[in-house]
Amino acid sequence: MSQPLSPLASRIARQVAAAEGKRILVADLFAAALEHDLSLVGDPAARARFRQALDELVSASLITLPAAASRSAWDAIIEPPLPVRVTRVDGESARPAVRPGPRVWPSALEAAGWIASRADEHAVLERIARWLRDNPAPVQVPIGERSAELFGDEKALGRFRKTRLFISGALTLDLLACYDPPLPFASQHVPGVGPVILLVTENLATYTSFLAAARGLDTASRPDLHVAWGVGGSFEQSVLSIPLLDPLPRYVRYFGDLDLAGLRIAARAARQAAKADLPPVLPATACYRFLLEGPANWRRPDDSNDAGQPDYADACAWLPPALSPRAAQLLASGKKIAQEHLGLRVLLREPVLVAGLAS
Image 1 (cartoon, rainbow, N blue to C red):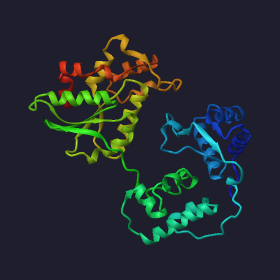
Image 2 (cartoon, rainbow, N blue to C red):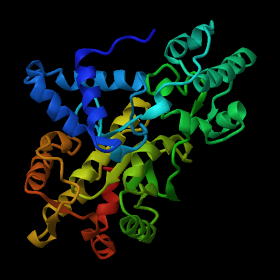
Image 3 (cartoon, rainbow, N blue to C red):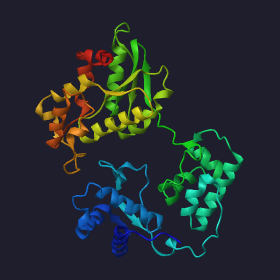
Image 4 (tube, helix red, strand yellow):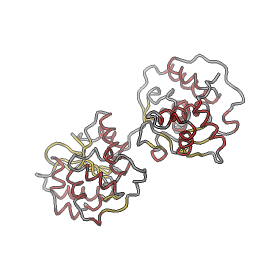
């Protein structure tokens, strides 16, 4: 028998059921929860209690959440992350016509077995149970390969990750000995002297110019560089590809737009690198200083800065102390500075901007 919903989850469920469309803004649900439950007002744990209530509705097959990998579908500024929208599960999809009989699952699948109540969920667990039995010491492989092995469909696991068996944490990629392959870098190695450095730029134009400027330096004085294009926000994942570079860099210098989105990319990539015990992701300090010291007409409205009043100091904490207050002031003004203002002509005129990456 399924667990009864908590009072907060029951209230949200009623609002979800009464909504006109199937996709409901979580901000509306949260506002209604604050209005009807005064115990949430001023409670530091209110956000966590609300997320727990959403997870209850997912487990009850009343709503689905966006894919965890979709950064635009989640508000992750404050922990725990909240989805921007939820989708109501309507009609018979929430209530199977035939409930599977009791089943004793292997210990690794016990948690998933408690959640699984539909025939399709039991079918997934049956395949995994057989695979676990036949593969006591599996080799870690990319998720697409494991999906093809388990289900004959290389994309099946990607779909299953959006279901409650994975969202609840009962099933994980670690359990299935697979992983999301890191996005590769678009990078080129420019040999030089000193420790190997990886320079990552957010945008393509800046990558192209730094690569040309580095190649133009005298080989006896230029740093030993990998020059890479981070492809915008993709760097948050491709940072995990650092171990694939040869020679391996000692540290990373990152240079992106001076805007809220760009600084969040840098900070998140730095946390990813630290968590994975990779070389540290450090700011290309001289390049950011160049942007901050530029003329006023470089400052333009920041389209990424639409999150109300975030903690700009926190977003800028990745920068060195000499620059972070000025960057926070820029963000608080609603403005940004594009990295393209530091272009090829500047790099050729001031080669220290490339040579100084090693300092």
